[in-house]
Length: 454
Image (cartoon, rainbow, N blue to C red):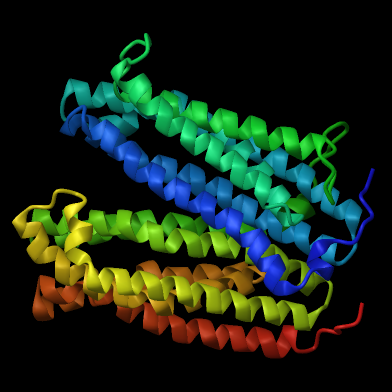
């Protein structure tokens, strides 16, 4: 039965609402950032080839996350807008489509795991161990990706209704399970067989399975502002189109990072292996700064989408301003850390003298992009909440691909390795100007005319 009590996104004071919805997501994202580092530490103890095998499969894992989260963003945006418009049946229908699309996405990746793992790894592997380990890891994480897709879909549906705590708990359960099982499965502890790289994959999917079970249990058995109806379900093209009008740009945005990494590695390898290593270290470290901002946006987007659908300009813009301030504060703290403690940060990875020499100026220069990135990221959330997902895609393409790689090549020719790192803040500043322009256009043409009365 549809829950009729007033939605907190229409009544709760915006500061309290943003805090209650964002904090759990921020904590969850920090857990995921920690997992990425710890997981690499365990696998690296098996040797360089083991770490290489996992690294080869990492782009496929990124793509799974990109498709799952991107679809979830479109789903969350549509549900929150329909709830704000009090179109509850359509919100229920959108939520049911989320489960359907999760299964469809899994089928695609499962087929890849069954038919494409060997040729994919074979295109990179140079010896039997690397090939075998890579194929095993790839097959396990893709064939069992149903757990990840359903966990993400359930998470985004709950977030769209204002429930941020249960998704946080589900993500934490999955990440902690993964971290605990990694050494057990990889090294054969507590009576388990030693599985090596395959054990890392099993630990990953076990964590995803438990997280999925938790999220689905509370999605189906706890009252929400939406109801999943799978009996008699029929997919509707218009609903899928509405989901992916926002979701596809988000999928593309989250896929851009892997392409940018490949491009930057290709440029940096021409200077030294240490430069590539430093760039990899930077990406692991910056996740602890950017992930809380992404978590903030997970709480911010449903609030803005709901109040845009409800035509409440005041609450929409108040949430936008508070989100901007919070993101800027987080990024400022990150900037201070990278500017004052680069030696300490690099020492966490037992960096060589050459990596210290290259890395200290690199961390200090790249981190100059943090504050303009904060503004650009929150502006992209406004684009998504107002059904302009394409603008988010465009800005992300500018930030992470269109501008940064050509700038890196140009700066490398002008001043060598020391200037390459300037490509990051320069790309962010230019993208910031574009984001502000689009945000102003949306405010004048779509937000300003909103009737604040229902």
